[in-house]
Structures are given as structure tokens and as C-alpha cells.
Image 1 (cartoon, helix red, strand yellow):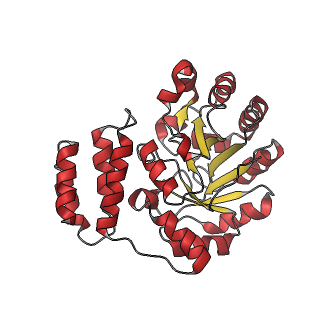
Image 2: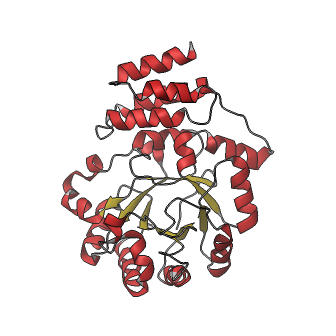
Length: 310
């Protein structure tokens, strides 16, 4: 059974972006669920004795989902059992379009392999009492077998499907076809999470209304504006929300900096990237990013940001 979520807006797993410090910020700002960056089942089984250091997270993120990828059934079973005690949900990635992963029969390559996918779902569901969820795309080059995959998921006991209705060939270009989310919602009885092109609270409301999805998942827009969760929650409940200025964003980024100290895997290059993301979409952000790009360490980064709000 899925845990109770505090809101209908979730943070998407994003490699190199949804680190534990950002997830904690998004949780504090109203994300109903956060998901770790996707992790190889082979890496998990190799690091089994030190898993909480390898996959960094905080109990304050709960409920939290861990996202796995990889199609070796025995390794998958082992990985599920290793992560099971630490996470509320175990998610499986069938959506990432990266060629170096699809060539390994992982992630979105599985959208063309219904029978292997059935074995993967069955293996995961049998290995744990925690809910298993999946994240899918609409196909490789054409919307091909995603409906078959979705029906298999429901038959095998998958608890929830997140659907990004772009093909692998599209990557993150073009427009997500929200009508496919509607089709998925009509096809299955388990909860559906809509994902793709939700940039604003208005987009989130429109996705709910147009598709009938149960939840929305925010990716790149949350990396640029973690306040989007507060804004969506406010907009859904009251019909209005507060815009966030550069000073507020920078103050929250300083909180991100404090949290990042707890996690050794967050390197300066990631921190600088997050600082640049936080300044997107607000007045004065472009000039500030030009300065941030040249920062050599955290102290210089903080000095630039402090100068921007004095």
C-alpha cells in the first residue's frame, strides 16, 4: 500500500540534480514525495554493506522513494531486499532515454520488451512488502508498447505508474502529449502520476483537469524553482499563489548549502549548478549566473550571492 502523501505534487528523480539536499528543500516547500537519483542494481549489490552512505538520504525526506534500474533478475531481487528497510517506495526506471543505459537493456529500452518487463515487475513485487512503482515513457520512437507495459504492471501488482508522455527519440524536446496520460488513466485502475512540461502552478492544475491523473511530478522546473511545490499546493487549494523574488530564492539556497554539508557526495560543481538553477526565471538572474559560473569555491559563491541581496 502506498504511504499517505502530504500533497499531490512530487519531485522527479533527476541525475545530478535531485541530490539529498535539494530533495530536503523541496520536501520542506511542499513536495508530497521525493525520489532519489536513479541507481544501478549492480552498484547497490556491490555496496550492500554501506548502502546508506552510497545512497544518501535523510529521514526528514519521508515518504521517500528509491529509484532503481537494471534488468538482471537475480541482482534486482538482491537490490530490492537491500534498499527495502530504508525507503517507503521502490521505483523502477523504464523512462531514462540515455543511450549508454538503453544499450544495456535498461531503462526505456525495456518499453520494447513486455515479457522481460513482466519478469522484472514480478521479481520486485515478490521480493518485498514495500510498494513497487514504475516510471515510463511513451515508447522508443513511436508510442508503441507502453499500454501493454502498463497493463502488465497492473497485473503484476505495481502500485503506481508515473508517465512522461514523450518518446525516447524526443528526449526532452518537443511537447509532452498529455492526451496519452488521459489514455493511461482510463486504461488502468492504479494511481497515475503525470509528468512532463509542468512549469507553473497553472500547468499543474491544467494537467489534473485535462488528464484526470492522481498526482503530478515536477522535474526541471523544480530544479529552477523549488518553491513551485508551495505554489502548486496554494493554487490548488485557494486559486492563487505568491511569486518568489531573487532574495527569497537566495535565502533558500543558503539553506541548501547548509544541508549539502551533511552529504559528502555533493561536490562543488553540483552546488554551483544548483546556485545557477535557483537564479533562473527571476529579474537579475542572468547577470548573476555569469558571475556564479566563474566562482571557484563555496566561499566565493556565497559572496556573490550575498552581494546580490544587499
